Image (cartoon, rainbow over all chains, first blue to last red; front, side, top):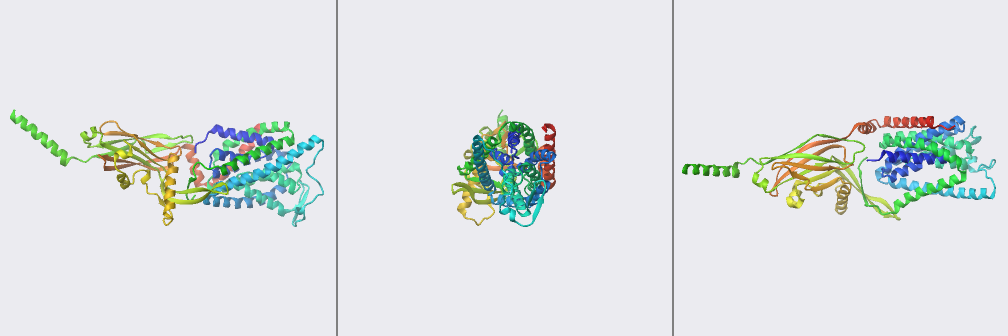
Length: 297
Length: 259
């Protein structure tokens, strides 16, 4: 495999810029970009997970200092995440043997990016309209409870001012861990909305907590992928990280100047574009219908 | 005078007699300038030159250009899965697959002339010479012969498309009557491992002799060490990858902190 160092640095930089601007990990962009760059999906996924650690660690440090991070909630999410990730890695290896990994990775990306992008776009367009009308919106409506808050085994999370059952927290963690290991993402783009809308975690601790647990899930995923599939390319990941951490800082500065809902609409469009491109590739007749891969590995 | 002519005649006849009966048979030898090729991470393919010599070549046949040489560089045998995509609900999905064992990772052939000008197709078949005559064996030999044939063809076709199987007529050149040079192409994605170079000598379309030499292709320097490390101590490799990521993230924050 021959790749260009500068292309990788630029790729990391561009994704880092976007991730800094929008406050997301960027794993969901790195993996598809690597696939577009003809890196085999198995390697793109595992290497993406490795790259996610660097950007999440960098981000979580900032939140840790500001104390906008719920360690207890993060730890419970993490416990679920580890279980989900272990399951995900075995499914990953199984799909790879079947020859269906590339398909499933693409389908998952198309589905998740499509849904998340679509929802975000709708929400942000609505917010832009509303702000034009002069109203302000709050995401959290205290006192409003859903079925999740009626489940047993309740636990108190002080930093989040939350008293909920551990079942949905563990389940959410496991679900994200599973996706993280198959898709090579941190899962922030699903975790953040889920924490806000499902568990009603206050917005100020959501990103920090999400980043905190992503570090560990991504680290766990990287080690397992490396052990089970030998698909982590540390040189590739390192180049992406270097570009990424540098790009993130500039992105963050630009992000502060843009308005929240406009920023979300832009990110939504970007997410939808990646989903469309991946989906498009599934429907186009491949250059050759035959493909070769090493057997038994 | 008469005596001298007689002597010359004897000399002439004895010379042709030696040529007809006791002539030492031709032999072929090849030499590689190195038995190891190291490829770096920016390897974009290379030309490999193999020199060789004919021993005891008949000058007459050599002058007429009726000696032909074929040099083959064969990559290490590996099991390969060939998959076929078909259209399912509008999407192209892998649906069928056949596993082949011991498929040479690469097969590049250099010849003095076009294959059909050297010897008949049967000759190639008997020697299992040429990508088309490689014996590719499916793991499950009891499969449908039609499917196996289709996938065998696809396997060759994909290998050719990737530049791993190639045939280059005219890539073997005689530098003198007995010395020749073959240039073979190493594809950018050449497999790491032990490759075998073989040279085949033909005279008037008849196969005479074969010789071989070995060549090890390996990844160089850091790349090689990382590759070995990732496969031998894969867990430690994973842990180190994580540590590198954490340090990079931490340094990134130190250098670029904004709060």
